[in-house]
Length: 107
Image (cartoon, rainbow, N blue to C red):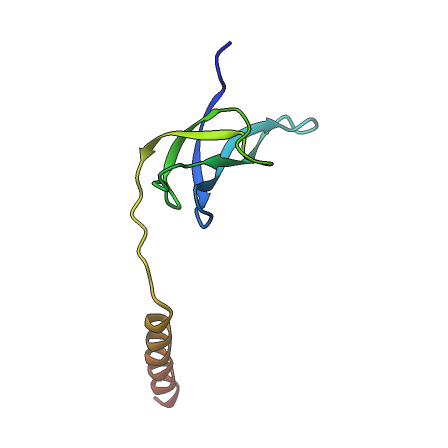
C-alpha cells in the first residue's frame, strides 16, 4: 500500500527536528455550493532542520515518531528567503518615523 503524500507550506519551524506544515484544500459548502478554503496542520519530522517558514515542502506518512508526529519531510520543493529583522532595527525605524510625523503635524 502506498503512503499518503501531501504538499504544503511550512508555518512554524521553532522546534528542534520538527516543523508544522499547513496543507490547503477545498471544502464544498452544503448550502451555497461554493468551495471554501480549509487548512490542515501536520507536525512533520525534519531530521536536518532544513525547512524554514514559507517553504513549499513534500511530506509523507510515516510510522509515529512521537506523540503527535506521524509525517516526515521528503523534500523541499521551493525555498523562500525570509528577511530577518532585529528588534533594535524596528525600534530605531519607529523612532525615526515618529519624528517625521511630528514635523508634518506642525506644517
